[in-house]
Amino acid sequence: MTENRIYADNAATTALSDTAFEAMLPYLRESYGNPSSIHSFGTEAKRAVEDARKAVAEALGARVNEIYFTSGGTESDNWALLGAAALRGRQGRHIITTEIEHNAVYRTAQQLEKQGYDVTYLPVDRYGRVAPEQLAAAIREDTILVSIMTANNEIGTLQPIPALCEAAKKRGVLFHTDAVQAAGHVPINVRAWGVDLLSLSAHKFHGPKGVGALYVNLRTVLPPLLYGGGQEKSRRSGTTNVPGVVGMAAALGEAVREMDKALPKITTLRDRLIDGVLKLPGVKLTGHPTERLPGLASFYFENIQAEPLVTALNEAGICAGAGSACSAGSGEPSRVLKAAGILVENNKPAAPLRLSLGRYNTAAEVETILERLPQALIKAAAERVILPSVNLDDYD
Ligand code: PLP
Image (cartoon, rainbow, N blue to C red; front, side):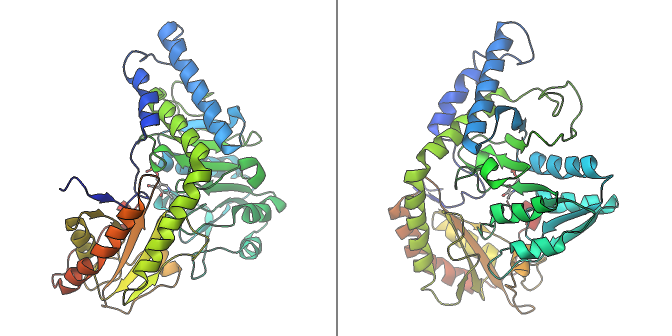
């Protein structure tokens, strides 16, 4: 692998920032205490965890006692849905979500269906958006929870969360948003938005992997998902990942502090990438043209298969993401693209391509991607072998 390879898969995960790394180091080495211990090692660790909670709360516009640390986005999403269902299950058994949620929400909703809950999967428009009126019309007397993601991981579309949330609140329904792709990339204010539950994951904003948080509004007494030692005020048992939460807080604080500077820079790079790619033949932009994550550019190439394209790009030193497309002999088409009406004819290959930029990408890298992409497309188009498709379950 070349040393000067370009990382354009920031929606899958991001590089740990130096700030987060430095903040974590003491808690990986000398301050390794368990925050539940009452000796000095423990109290040091506990102080670090509570400082981290304060920093995460500040970054989200939340109160400090509304932040619960988890093992990441998947756990936060599972807890939000399963917890809300358990909390409100006596009031009603109807849940509303969308057809384009990440599997961490989608599969959990399917699981709740098996337990007797009735789930409405709202359709989206061709840009992947849900209209607030559409949500309002779907709310019933027995609706207990709405879960709609802030930003989509495949096509980058941002949802109008405050308006969607208002529609749910008017009817007294709990509102959860999976902000895993959005946190640290676009401004979030849980109080201004009015959400009850919000999930985030550190590795998507230059923090470490395997750590996340769930914002739980003070009014919402969410029952635990995990039982055990009673950590996190008995709402989420398990010894706290001290270096993890410290790293997450440092990364989120840094992302929020740098957002004013980073946002226009990354958006400019993304738009240059979109303009350049759309000049190529047989390509469509997926997702909303403007209401999208600042760094995420997603496309759809006709007559090309996803795997050969990502492989050809990788050989050219460009690390990009793909999803499964409806291609001959391969698996299911992407649920998200299908929901947005971006369908291909049967047996006709088509490749989704996701180029996701972050704070560390440069204008020169974008130009290199644009220079090398046509050759990779030619190579992928010449590919005759039908490779097994990427498993959508692995699509982050
Ligand atoms: N939700 C979304 C929108 C995601 O993109 C991801 C990423 O994988 C997740 C949830 C799961 O997060 P984690 O990898 O922290 O479990």
